[in-house]
Image 1 (cartoon, rainbow, N blue to C red):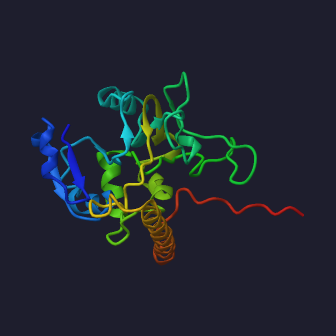
Image 2 (image 1 turned 120 degrees about the vertical axis):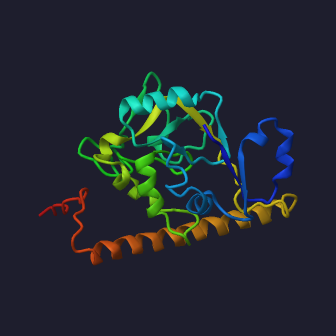
Image 3 (image 1 turned 135 degrees about the vertical axis):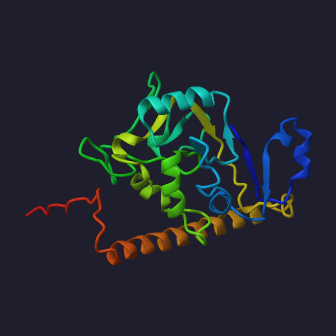
Length: 252
């Protein structure tokens, strides 16, 4: 494994207190996000010698996670895009498909039979199937090459990208994308983005305002990404969508 740390707060030297710090690659750019860093420093040609790319957030608990066992499962299951399940007792779970299932090795789908956004046996699209969350994705070399080109230079939060990752699954996204239950993590969901070294001691209200601004910008970028995707689909007359959903039948 080779580790690359992306520093968004400009603090690098302080990491030298850790014995392993000199053995990892440090990249620093203030007030950026991991997707901004990934687009610029994880070009497919640069990471071509690696079989898998872990693109993880900083606020993850890994006490119950072993990367060697994880990759063994991923290879055995044929996952091109995956993530470790989230411990529901210690994590902020925003999407139930990411929650760990006890006595399970992996899962590929999620069921929701009530309310809006239902997921049942007939559901084959994200987020019911073929979907992982963006806080801890793991990509195969081929899947990363595809994903890297999908990341937009100017959309640093990458919202909306998760719904299209299935197109990079090197085949059937319902089989090649999944969540690993037996090797799992905790997502602490710490509001670090928007809180720099300059305003760490600022008021709670100021931190909340920063968080709201980040969330607002993320939604803006998501709509821009969707518009670009839809426009690209319209302009490319030769492309056939392998996951195009049939039109819904109207009740009479």
